[in-house]
Image: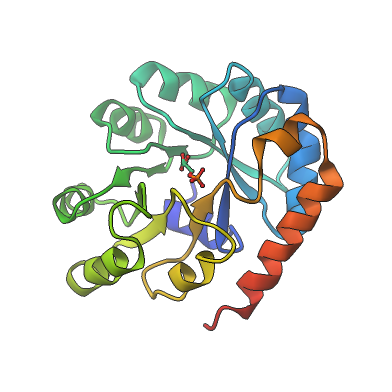
Length: 213
Ligand code: 3PG
């Protein structure tokens, strides 16, 4: 089993947070993103198409690592794991999702928004957490503060990030990866605009390549 940190390390610094309206969009989307090095995708369980989309990516082969996002309950976590999700993401910490992750041996990226929550997830043995919603709970300054007290906990900031704010986040030593939907706009996916999506991914990849370190 991969650890969450090794999955984040594989992500080319960005974890696209995807909302799928149609499961058949999953494979062409993965191709558009994978062409720019973004081969780790989070499919959020916010639509009825999400589980079938996860299943089709999980069965597609090794080029894409697919996780389930917005996992809020035991049942959702079980269904996502059964569909082949290789990691689980929640906007906060869920004891129920944690238990499924432990039972199934699937990495879990839990959300945190405060130092107390960061201490709690680190105390459970997690080496990475998602800061959410990053732009609301202190942004880069919060991440610097967390690094000064919990430098071993890697942070994946998500929520309100954009092409222009991403580089500052990625420059932080405790940020191996950021998450966001800016490179996967729901409307472009729904319209099947694969070349526009590949262009957005290319712009993101070019900025990632310029981040020092
Ligand atoms: C998430 O679930 O992580 C967020 O919805 C992604 O945030 P963003 O849409 O502001 O990038």
